[in-house]
Amino acid sequence: MPDEAYVRLAAVLDTIPNGFAHIEDGTHLRVLEWIFTAEEAELASRLKLRGETAEEITARLDLPLEETTELLETMVGKGQISGWMSRSANARKYALMPFAVGLYEEQLERMDEEFARLMEEYFERSKGVPLFSTNPPIFKIVPVNKSVSTDLIVHPYEQAEKLVETSASWGVRDCICKKQKGLIGAPCSYPMTVCISLAPRKENAFDDNELTTPISKDEALKLLRDSAEAGLVHCTMNVQRNQTYICNCCTCCCGVLRALTEYDQPNAFVDSDFVISIDADLCSGCGTCVDRCQFDVLSIPEDISVADKDRCIGCGVCVIECPENALTLVPREGREDVEPPESLMDWMTKKAISRGVDPSELM
Image (cartoon, rainbow, N blue to C red; front, side, top):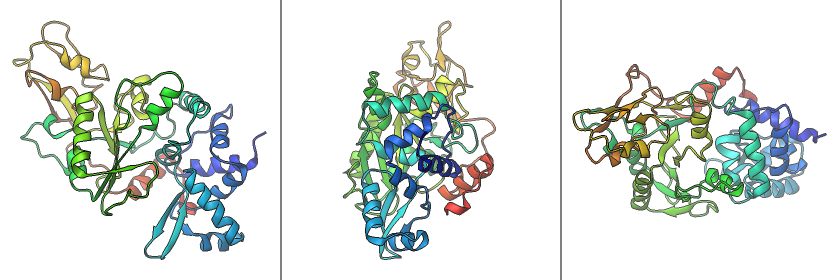
């Protein structure tokens, strides 16, 4: 029998709008047992999403300050909770994180083959529920500028370069999805060090981050271009402002994009304002676009490329390599008045309502 601390933590994580799937065979509990000791799981299950100082936590929970602070710091170091210096409180704050995106991604350095195989079991059994089965979607597809027709009005949150240009700090880290697949004997052929971290307002935000290497804005833009040329898909949090990452993803490794292809619901789990358009007069039927597309959108049944637009997520990966400039991204029909949630809090509120959960006690 698993320790009750893991059962409580699993229930708390599933109360967060992102969700944490309950697996009947207990795989979800084995995931938590790998990440946490029972003592760590017990403390994590009693933390808040908003963040509290060690003094606030120990007073609320009636715990000894010195020992609890030491445990909290250990848990931050293990990527189990978040910790940051609060200017307003003039003290360090500690907070619970969603399982994804959050706790799982912070296991990048700790992940070994055992955990990688455990997570593969979790992915296969959960099938992305409830994160992918309710609105709003977690990912927003952000095409590169030259994929989008120049006569369109494109909002800043729809352009990958804009997200980089308007940030104050930039960093890069290895892709945990590619690491996970590599550890179970399915290495990825795409570049691995491609996850871009962004700080919208804080300068030098990644100087002391063990998982993230600080880079310049120019280096971040080059990484974005290199990822596009390699055929990777730019994804970010499905909000209008204050995005903190651009994932450069592939369908062989990325948990979200794998869900699109493996569950055969291309637009169910990501938000996309664009769709591919093919100029039949320019298309030579060379097949470059077919090779580039990871979603089986394009084919050449006769002499020119045709698209299954129901499968297209509007990433633009096919567009940038078309030798005839026959492909462009155009607005998806019916999306004229659709906007992503304004902020992360807005996204979480909408997600909580969609899932029928109440995370107010964690706030």
